[in-house]
Image 1: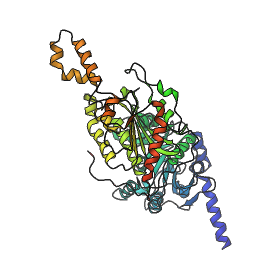
Image 2: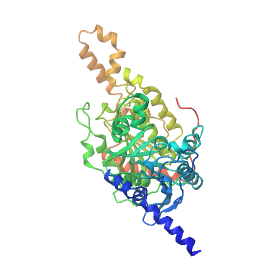
Image 3: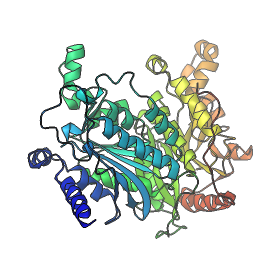
Image 4: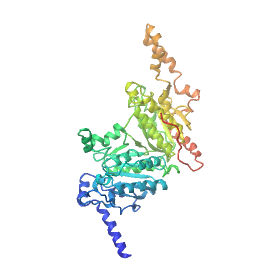
Length: 515
């Protein structure tokens, strides 16, 4: 027995060498940590229990790759804890044949997904791998689909997140694109169906990995990624922060913490954020930071569709999802990209029982030829599906503009809110008032001797019907509040709404077909 144990310990110790000293040195020279160093950064000290450490590559009938060495077959897998809570981790090892997908490597990943499904544990993927190994996958027949189906079913059951820390192509990039939260490291990460050599072979184009699928491209243009960071340490910190707001799985509620901020705090700066000239933009993030627990706002997709702000925060220690328009960008109009960003974030919150807080200031859904080509109408109506199946407390604060379907998509009238509040600056209409009058009184304005004066008079007449007080008079909002009351009113409404948590939660059921 002792001889066998000694052999086992030698094999385990050899795993720390990854793909060999030269390849480890090359990894570090590229500014990247090893797969095991990344696992150690992520997990609580001493909590990692490895699965499949003794796995080796599959032996195939084709000519073998010379000196093929594949410790753990190029992927480190197992379970541990993050801040005391269990997670599964899959960390691709670029020092082992470029982190490429081998047959046993694939089996290890499938085993982790199987265990995460059975045990209802979050999965954290650390991607740094190329596509399939030619010598192992040639002759394997039809490409597998089943693991993508398993991953799809895991989403909404337990958190599925990843950091892309190196060039990821093929199967790795496809799995990464399915994650609920995707962090990418600038300068080293790439997500692409095929890497630059494959692009050159297939299309004749010459591109580098940044142009093809770098962090800035995916986190600011395509929207495939969520948050771009500069270092691997920042990537791991973002993963941990995201997890801290969510439950371990959909059979549990999000964890509240002991607050260190005054629930009655009412910042004076809220009185002066909206300019006297209401046409001038302002920064909605100032309102977000003034209302939530200090230092608790974690923005998601900060560089994509900037006219929409999404992120997690806490109110008196309770996790909430923040959805807010950003008047600094297109006046807060909802584009197709903004609608997609909103819908995805709402679905995350709905799946994991995170209450939603809407801060509304939008002139509506973006219009124009470009917007129609982007299918803004269809994307906007997908938000209605999110509301229909989102069984969490919803709180709405209308800060300024609340026009048309854009306002409806930001927690409009009848969206099953626990509170609908408005600042005195709130302005309601089906469309912006000036445009509406121009359209409705086109003939009268054309016939008028002084069309500008007539337009101004009509605007003033209608304006008296469009503000916060008339809306409150019709019970279209619950109350008009002093901006300084926003935080305490939201906290009281949230804590009242949390009384609905009288029994254990379960996964959110969804029906219907998205438009």
